[in-house]
Image (cartoon, rainbow, N blue to C red; front, side, top):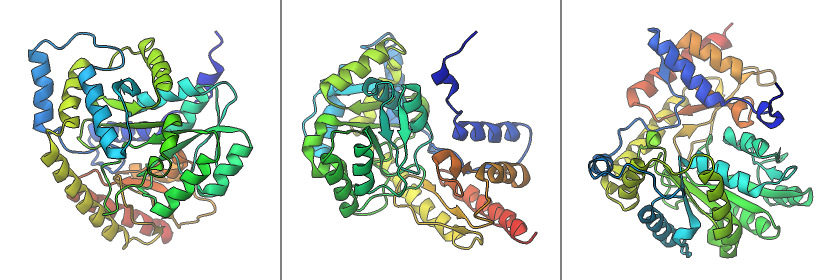
Length: 387
């Protein structure tokens, strides 16, 4: 049998693979500290969980409209119209089975075979695979994302660009001047934009997270904003994400969803409505404070680890240090595998994000696990540096 060439060109998700291996070792009795997870370690806030339970009791367990229940789409449109000081309607909203699902539908709706799409490094692991699965060609800037790289990509035929702030894997939050430069450059092109904003509520600086639409509102017509409830409200398993885009882009993405997964889980949608309507604001703020303290803790601990250099993240829940042990020949896949099997600590290799030589460490873990995990990492690196 001949299989799809586009499917065969895809690479597995390293983040999911390594997290699964860590769970397998833990089930086998190993003491494994996982600093690899891309999800909060909190329980879903009770008001949100109760909204889901109420939906079950009220019999809201059948099919819904494939693009989401009207109540949730209306609430999302209202919230983001206020947030971005723009106007969105429910017809601009698509509710999907997690933000990843929305990203995949939007990419498929935008890309024709051979289209080039700019993916700034380091990128989230699934962006290139989504582009390739849709027949597109990922292209990567030679330098860090800046205005000249965007203009160069457009000149070479790029039709779209992905933005992700705060960033996974770095936790980077752009300055106003940086975001203005990016917005100005994109405004000079015809490229569409997918803005992956899933970590938008997890920023640890007073200035907040500047957005491309803050500078050129007319880009709303070719920008898709993607977010969800998973990171902010500890709802990863509920699988609800959403996007806002022009009505035609949303309509086409909705067709793809209707012919593949149909509607997201009805119960999860009603739970997500409680989150979007602000019924767990106190719990949201408590989780944010906890992540902020953990960010400070892990950075304090990492500062005492020889063999690493890093920048303090301003958002998300990741630190992305560079390995200084034999930097010319480092293989982060091998490093992370040895760290897991020898020291019992799970982190993610930077090669998965297009950044060989780095590792992603999640602080979506308890303070005790962070302390023990960084201690083991320090001892592991010490042994490598002294052999």
